[in-house]
Amino acid sequence: DGNNYVDFCLGDTGSMTGHAPAATVAAVTEQIKKGTTLMLPTEDAIWVGHELKRRFGLPLWQFALTATDANRFVLRMCRLITKKPKILIFNYCYHGTVDETFAILENGKTRSRHHNMGPAIDPSVTTKVVEFNDIPALEAALAEGDVAAVLAEPAMTNIGIILPDPGYHEALRSLTRKYGAYLIIDETHTICAGPGGYTKEHNLEPDFFTLGKPIAGGVPAAVYGFTHEIATAFKAALDIDSSDVGGIGGTLAGNALSIAAMKATLEHVLTDDFYAQANVLQQRFTDGIETVIEEFSLPWMVKRLGMRSEYWFQKTPPRNGGEAHDSGDYELDRFMHLYCLNRGILMTPFHNMALISPQTTEADVDKHTVIFRQAVVALFGEKTH
Image (cartoon, rainbow, N blue to C red):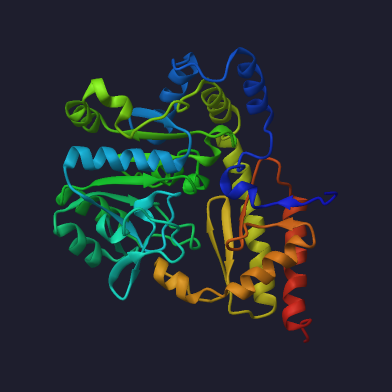
């Protein structure tokens, strides 16, 4: 449309690799000449499997097309193995369009999330919801013995960045083991924390690991990994003759095109060097915002996770999704987003979050700082001394 933007939204993480990364484009171009989907594994899948194990720690991996599918599949596996009916999630989490996760905590009760479109069943039948960082509530919910799995981002991101309290992940891992629930870590957004995600950076020990969005440079692809113990239990519960209609997998999952894109992206784009460079730029981005906040004595703050950061219109960081939701200033969110957009800066539209890609430059970051300050002046007037 003739408009150019500095893109900090980056497809809400799907293009964290940058747009059309050269290595991914070359791999896709080469593979598409040979065929896109074959119903057979390719040699690239072997390399990708070994690389996923190296990065994230879990030994066994399967492929899907989206993180939504990866999460759906592992939840089915957990219920099949444990024979327990429920899952547990955190208030105002987001794990794609998984039906069971469209639930919130309201007045102490699990209920369907507002504007949940046409749910097949009331999510309170399938799901328990507790607040992030609330260890007593987590234990009380698990102690009832009917939870097959806890599905969690290691740090919440979709209601804003909410970091775990010190010791929270140790408690989460200990309690899931104590009460026989599997722990699923969804790193689809938190892959911004490092090449091995938050899991590798903080030595987490999940039973399952899911990841989508940027793993194939924006080409539809996702993965889910799990332990040998889970593989053994799953195989024992599996009816091979009907496994293709059991609700896990898909005709295009693991297709040759997606796997070629995944190999190229992991090998040449989402590298240690990229993360090191991106973290330097993200620190510059964060510092720029904090300088303006300090200059105008604003009751605002910046939260950061690796190469992801966002500004909040409050001084105290929320500890859970309920606090984040209740403290949101949605009119101000929209103003800041639109102000930036009209001046050539694209932020994530749901909240003012910014990601760094291999194509981001210091000039891009500094342009945002200038426009952020202009927005503050438009709201409060120029600073007088």
